Length: 337
Image (tube, rainbow, N blue to C red; front, side, top):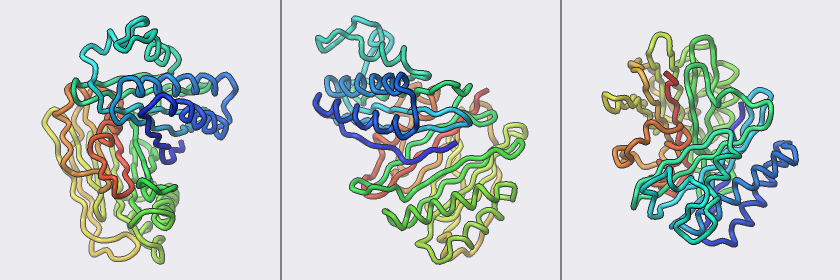
């Protein structure tokens, strides 16, 4: 599986739909999609862009390529702070429009997408997820027992993201790394990508051992904040070890439980590495994010969002809590039970 940072496109007027279509075509070409698949992706992106231009305030499209096993795909998030939809089901019906258009946009997107999801709150805005996979399609964009998604965005004005994340299965364990290279730009990206390479090579180790090896490998780089989470869906526990400002929480019907990340800089100075263990309740959600996202997020503002796809949850948090002064990564993993 490969997930690089997203392409973020502002959409505030109809003319920007053509630009979004060109970005989609370029992305599809880089992934090696067939002409038919590339055309379908272009339609999805164009329809979502036009929908943003018609209805949204501060509309934004996020695009990124997906690779899993022998499949490739494109994920699109359309985010806005528009008036929202009081009746999502009605808005998906062909022929319904609140702007005097034919009203086929979201319906067409839903039909073409491998996975489609919407969350909308009146006066807060709407988030639409459209994921398109080429054949052969993977069963789910998931890890054993988990469904996951992420948003990874460079600081505005930067071409590369200093954050990075990776996931790997080892037996019953699902391991997740989130790394935030200090600062932003190329040198921050080099640090986080080095952490990802070492994580993938050493995933059979314990979490403190993984962080220790990453620390040693990052000596001489800018350094990073990094955290490794292990979810064991059989034992129903989460193990966590973090250094620096990576925020991580387990969300469930019992509320949110923050996990402890110790002070230090991976690749520069670490006083102590310690693993903590927490319960993993039924229908639990893991939320991890770098400090490009404010810690004051509140999911209670969004009724029903915890039942939505992980990528959609990550997209809404990015939309409303991105500081815009740094790179940002928001990662969400949830139980499939």
